[in-house]
Image (cartoon, rainbow, N blue to C red; front, side, top):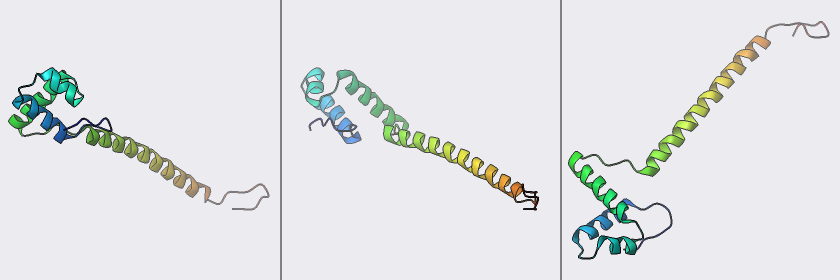
Length: 107
């Protein structure tokens, strides 16, 4: 198992790293170096997986949380756009009323 610096570390990578720490005779610091992570990160992952095993609730994937936040921002932007469009359509219905133009004719 090798560390790949591209993108985020997968759940499988984290599980395998925690498994290696638990089963290996190597020092945690040595394993951490080999995996390209810090010793504290290995501990954090172990604690997260232990908590997940007890509660049965997995920690949400960071990318899923990011996606959710992006969708919320987009939703807010679209709501504003809808309000603007509705305000514009109500204004256009007002302007559709017969009003005199500059030449004196009714619109």
